[in-house]
Image (cartoon, rainbow, N blue to C red; front, side, top):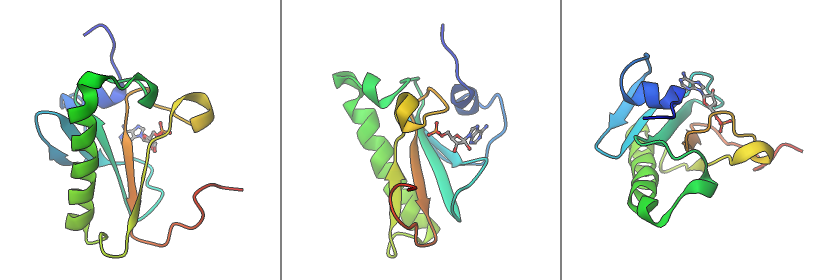
Amino acid sequence: MSEDTIFARIVRGEIPADIVYQDDLVTAFRDIAPQAPTHVLVVPNRIIPTAADIGADDEAVVGRMVRVAAQIAAAEGIAEDGYRLMINCRDHGGQEVYHLHLHLLGGRPLGPMLAR
Ligand code: AMP
C-alpha cells in the first residue's frame, strides 16, 4: 500500500486500540479522546481518504459502516435514547485523520449539532 494512516495501522493490529468490532470491510474502535460516554470510530479497512473520495465501488463498505455503527449503539445500550453519527470532511469539516471514519457519539444528550 503506497499510502498509510494511523487508522490503517490500527486495522492491521500494528498499534494498539480498543477494537469493538472488525469484519472483512470495516473496523470499529474507541476514540482515544472521547467526546461523549460512547465515542467509537468506524473505519473502512481499505483507506478512503475523505467522504469526498467515496466512489461507486465503496457503497457496500459505507453502508456497512453505518449499519455496524447502529449495531454497536445497540450493544452499548444507547440506541433507545439515541445518538449521533458524524463524518468530518477535509479542512472546514475539521477532519484530522485522512482515513474516512464515522463517529458514533452518545450516552448523554449531545446538544446542538454545531458549536456556536
Ligand atoms: P476527525 O477530526 O473527524 O478527523 O477525528 C479524528 C478522531 O480520531 C479524533 O476524535 C481523535 O481523537 C481520534 N484519534 C486519533 N488518533 C487515534 C488513535 N490512535 N486511536 C483512537 N482514536 C484516535
